[in-house]
Image 1 (tube, one colour):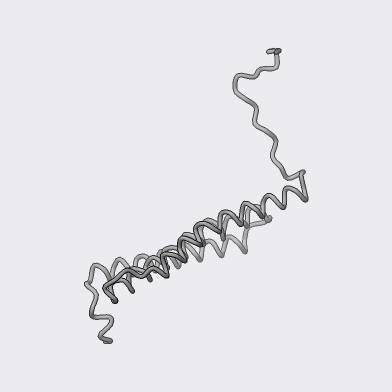
Image 2: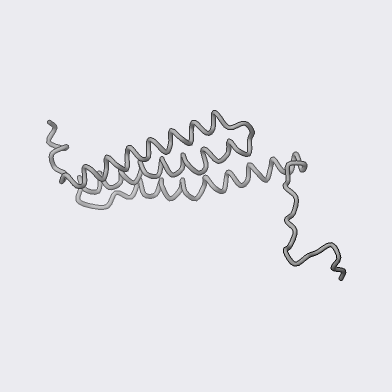
Amino acid sequence: MSPLLDDLPLWLDIALTVLLVLGAAISLVGSWALVRLPDFLMRLHGPTKATTLGVGCVLIASSIYFSAQQGSASWHELLITLFLFLTAPVSAHLLVKALLKTNPALRPPLPRRQFDSPSEKR
């Protein structure tokens, strides 16, 4: 065994393994959704929701590992995670806005308010 792998306590190894496996599984589900869902609006949820969370888990595991190895905080992975969590929803929102601008028929109808009735006149 490598001396690097023996330095961490067992509980930290287990936590990092769980984060890595969970992140890989969530990313796989998000990627599968990107391939299998039928239209653009449904496909957009795969990368923006599941894959972002999966990559975030992997980056957090990496940050914890290198922080434990170096004895000080590892800011690179945390900054990448923050940037990913801020930019993925914004880019998805902009993609949907652009789609609705080019094809207004995709816009859902406005919901009716509960207190509106057909007999009520204002």
